[in-house]
Length: 344
Image 1 (cartoon, rainbow, N blue to C red):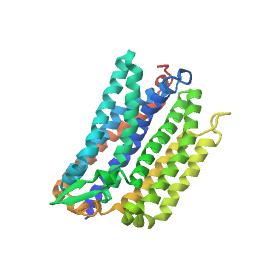
Image 2: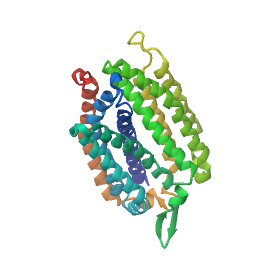
Image 3: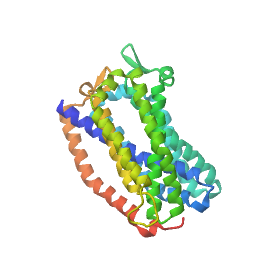
Image 4: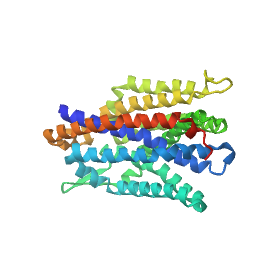
């Protein structure tokens, strides 16, 4: 059981890292589309500058996530693959479409705008589809017949809770990306773009909080077992909500480093990440021991213990090599003044 808990923790860690990085990536693509005709603000240039070196890095984590599922929980992978065949196929199609159009938009200049629109729209649909995997694992929308699990699409897409999850994914994507792009604009000394993204963050913050509350309000209808377990950690959920006070300081308080400039977006970004980390811990803990409620648990889906230890050592070695590289990449990306202040 201990090995299975370690394995699911590793898997959930991949989910969280990818969720944060992909949120920033997909949101930047959407903002690039929204502000493509407002050249004076340079908001699109800022979004493209952030997007260019990060979308390739982000995609490595979804590969790691899929590999982790099949290597750590192979007995659960079949059921997951069966019920996620339709949403998973759509997600893969949109990811491929977005990646291809992002590349083509930088090559086929005469078609840049339509390609940017398509990649931007695809990028905002992907988070909504990705998060729909969570309510699917709650078990309410999975039917079992002749030992085979099938996804009931009608019940799935008529559930208010599913739409609350989708709304939260989209609003969070735009909120977190607007905060990061505000910080990036500030570092680039593009103050007009900074004010635009800071304003977007002020609008989207309350919307994200409202969507999170809607998830909790509609959750008992579809997964009362999960709701009751999450309520056992109500104090942690309230701490998570309390981080909005720090986010508010980051959005509205005067900057201590620049006179006459309001906002500390980096503080807000850090507060949001900690907020999501606490909330995801409460959700993940309440979900245990189920991968898909009620038939697939972490124990029934777990790989052979000897195989797990070999895979786990491989992950440790791999991250020991790769993680310093990601940190170095990020520090170069955020601190290279020549890149930050280029005009293109």
